[in-house]
Image (spheres, rainbow, N blue to C red):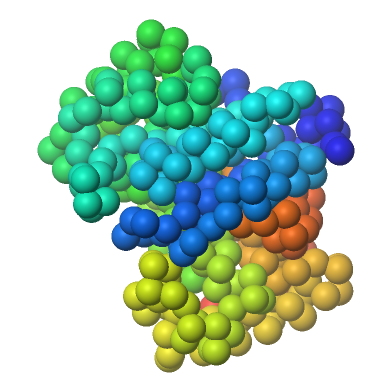
Length: 323
């Protein structure tokens, strides 16, 4: 077991005092099925084993959300941390509600209630980083951010951040209270935030924790044409164009390059994909999900693995030739 407080590289997250490891544990998939953005059925004991393995390898933060599994992910995280000798940072999100049928609803008007529910499910007195999950409805951003600022002042959350915000929305929030972090999607499959969002965050000392750095499993080396065709209906990826031909063929060709680069270092293609996101100076950390302890073995090398300038050039040449 690694003592991450002493031996693991950490990075300061934006304007906070949170020193986080370059990789964090993402708890989206462990929410399980039963809602429209689930990843399919999930065994809770396997989830807990995955979290324990991540912490044992030195990861010092977990990112979850109230909506993941309709509250279930937060409950599983609480179970996993109940008897741990040292507590990692716990990040969660608000702004997505659900009805009795499990339908997801964007709503920024009940954050004061949501925080109480998350504190109860997570079994903690304070949340290290509380984030608005989506900036929807857009017209409610200012009022919602004022509530977030009050939660920080009250001591129920230590730091406040956002997820999926564009530059204009970040600026509007910053005019009210400092934004500690933004959580955008960022990967070799979805590099769009490089144009405006990452430079803005870097300029304004807003930490960036990116999600889906392996393209929701596309870049792990485990996805194949056959597997993509057999994804269960309760796995949201079964409805995504990136997991279908012709896009999938391009992504699998990219994986072949990542395998080639990784093999020279004893690293998986997923670890190469994560390292590619971490090469950007604006990125503080990458959120990486895992559904069992074995999957952790294929990602924790990214805590310390970094790409050379030549390897980055080879990847960028592929991306330019195969947009």
